[in-house]
Image (cartoon, rainbow, N blue to C red; front, side, top):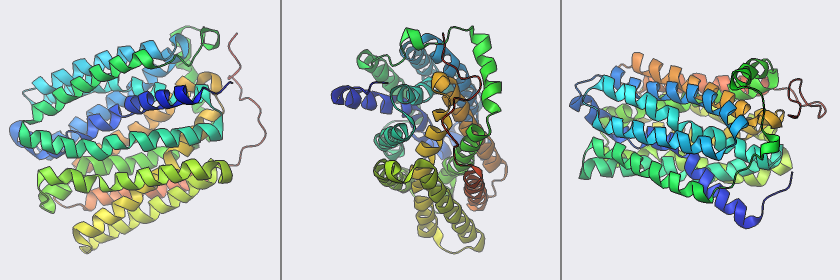
Length: 407
């Protein structure tokens, strides 16, 4: 495949970064408002955890929907449809008057938001081969990391200046901004490369993809890691604000510390992956995540370390994402270039499906301390490390069964 020009690459990466940012923006922007939301809607921490897990459910299944659609109809039109649905869901969240209304509109919001990340990853795979795509995904994630870095900080300021409803109406505005940016986004899947089979047959491709052990191990590596990440996202507002008494307007600054580590290691990954290979760096990242998760769990269980100890452990855990996510996604997609949309969707749904379980489990086990959160993070880190160690080295370059070129 021919590589795009430098100017096209920069423009495309910036737009794809915005599309990939809708996931963290939708989860992180409202985090400082969770305790306020619980009081305003007269809901408990378990229902507030459902506002996150319901989003992840919709996001997970939404990716399974958008992947085959993108393989059949191209990338741009499905992204536009997803953004329109995201705007509708965000407006519904802003107008909600009960916790259950908010939970329902979060599902609508998330199904729309899922189109951006799943098709952005597929676009990168359309343009680049495995190691180069891992390099580009790391670049993409470095730029995209500005979203989770800034989102809770901005969300805290919006809450201070206006209300929790304004946070969701801000997301509506970002959806319209992304729609406008699509004008400058090139279509990366030419009509000649699109799958011609009916959508129902494309959905059955997930069965074939799920039978590939390497793809599933790559997906599970990221899935366990995301279980830890979403336990942190779901419970850190209560751990930092209620347990450690961090002011809501300052929560974003503490929450964002791991994002700085993510950006730094993603940048390192862009420089190292072509030299050492994505699989080796992924194993290093998962070993680091496992160690950081175990340290965090020991700190909170033993009652030592305090706020600084927990924040430091989470910086290390978060930073390991730079070696885990891009390399595991690139590895999973590398064997299925003509089904990149479906493969990306399956991997993403597994990642966020694990997030659903961990967010719900974190809420169910909540005891007023950070211990349940860090216990799940430790399990996630260890599970990710075990899966990465099981990935066997690729043998040859044969195209997997069922991934023949369309024609």
